[in-house]
Length: 294
Image (cartoon, rainbow, N blue to C red; front, side):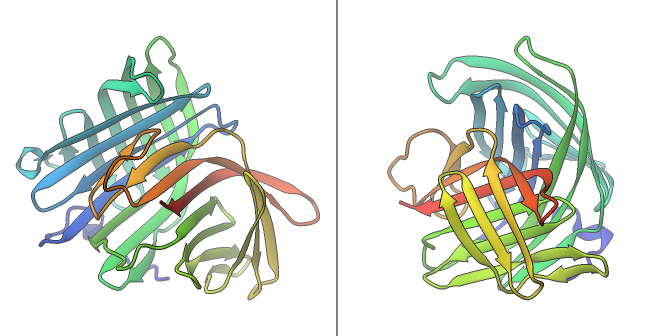
């Protein structure tokens, strides 16, 4: 874990095959009734727009691939056919917009999404070096407008972002992973290769500290217990909404849908969760991503 990211690193990086770059923003209302994610996954030849929104238990998504040459760079803005992202202040503020049609995960019916929001970080981005891949992660608040069909309104949501670049291939396919984000408390990545790979950070009174060890145990479906023995900290997460489902194939191949297809390697689920801490039962809204090998 490092806090040495330079302003110019919060932008496009030169890529060579088989490298990729991801700009990934995830948000949720505090009650979990509306949440979603917006992502550019950029390769040397193609770009993937991945947008998914959950609203009152219904899941809607768009998965659109287009040539890298069609990703327009307009000053501080990256623009695809439907999704755009504007850097307002590196590692602090981004403006995200979307205009297009999403489809229902169950029956495929269309619904128009129009969105424009500001994502503002609460603290510095942490850098994690994962061999040939680098990841920067930070949390904060999103404010803006989101109109899905006839449902609209001003939104204020929790968010986290992941900006990463390099070679995404982990080698052998892991048995699964958990990415637990409890804003203001901890960020944990726990990858199961038979024995866990752990990284992340824990917020303490003295500042952020690296997570190198974690004990993660599922108490029952949707409820996970975390223990960080280095710091004597324990927490519990409980999902508050049905998570969105994506299927992941080889590096650069992923899609939001309900059922696997040939070539899929992992089933990945992402959604809001309530994290509970300590004897006082402090509760905050965060995120939980869980993947399982197919």
